[in-house]
Image (cartoon, rainbow over all chains, first blue to last red; front, top):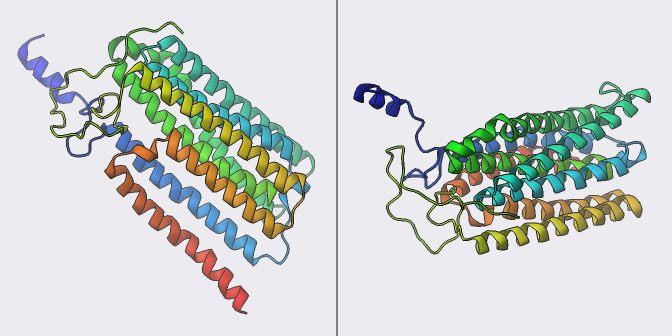
Length: 207
Length: 136
């Protein structure tokens, strides 16, 4: 590679993927994910706001546990909490330089995410069999919108973690620090998904 | 667990300057090359213990919410109060320990302060409507 080509490649390099920027003290992906999460707070915040508005204005409001499957949703809550732990354990193991255990914990996170989606599928199937659709009532419209959007976020996590577990893990050989940072950033997204469910579960199922 | 080489801070290879003045005694999370992020295996193992304790606390709090609101079939206003307090506690644990917000950079706090402000504006609408309804 001649000097010109080398200089050209250097210019094309994405800056601060590993080292913190001097002005922010953070690598770019980390600041990026926090800005993204801020926008997500507004998205779910708008939905929660609508939910509270519709509920306080309604003369009668059903209690979710009267017809939703609380034991299955409780199991899903435990599953998501467990997946939050496995993803931080993956990150911690990668920081220890242990790729094998890092990947095992990423795989466990993936299994938890898939189990969550399967359970949600059972719940939706049951609701549809009972002829309960989003158009049936305000409660069900909110239930399907919020859990559906949350489910899409879980699906997004499944796609990203699958990539990082299989083809994306090759980066470990060339740039360990960058791969470790990628897991941290995806972990932050995943904890946010868990955080949303922590509020969704009691709001829809228990109140 | 068999351990390989630790992911250690190295000299930058991307030609970008590294931060000059960083406080070395604070534990923050600016990434694996954050000069403030401790990398010793002992420190990381200590963090792992904290994660497992938080996991236990989250599991107990979840069981408590379900028992109080579903098992005891509490009246709505009490169920809402209990569920919200426990959900906020769980949210604090996840955000504080798993997302490391207890030891983050100032810039992240600034971004989140702005987010919290606009989130509060979003919730002010239904709250105002609720107070109006009580007045009538």
